[in-house]
Image (cartoon, rainbow, N blue to C red):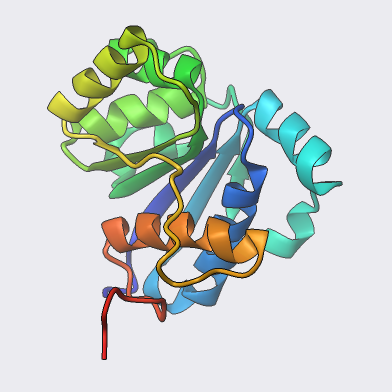
Length: 190
């Protein structure tokens, strides 16, 4: 991995703040593999963090650059900043719909639009069930535009014992999709 990698992490408003927290923590663990991490959180993402995990303490993540949800002057609002990967975790169906239709009404959707137009890697960790045909069509649109839909669907073959271990199966899969090197469970690896 090159140290110069630049990654955007956006947290949408669906339930699943544990995924965001573990993604932040894992990124800190592999900080030798990236140069910059830009973070933008929706209002509902912050609310869900408080409801599901307790108070959000940004001081734990001082290595990250946090941007306000409407900061269109931030570097992630332009392709010239060359952020090569964007992870939306979790991604609500409303946020997915806005991304799939190119509605750039906040920094999350603008950054996703930039990543897609620049043909860079966009990973949406969809967190909803059941899915309507509208959701599926929006996922198809994003996929056809070059994005990756990675549902927050945990695996169990590693025999996770805690909620954290279950959620990490999703987060580690996302980081694998980004191309990061991880020390994680591998299927049938001897």
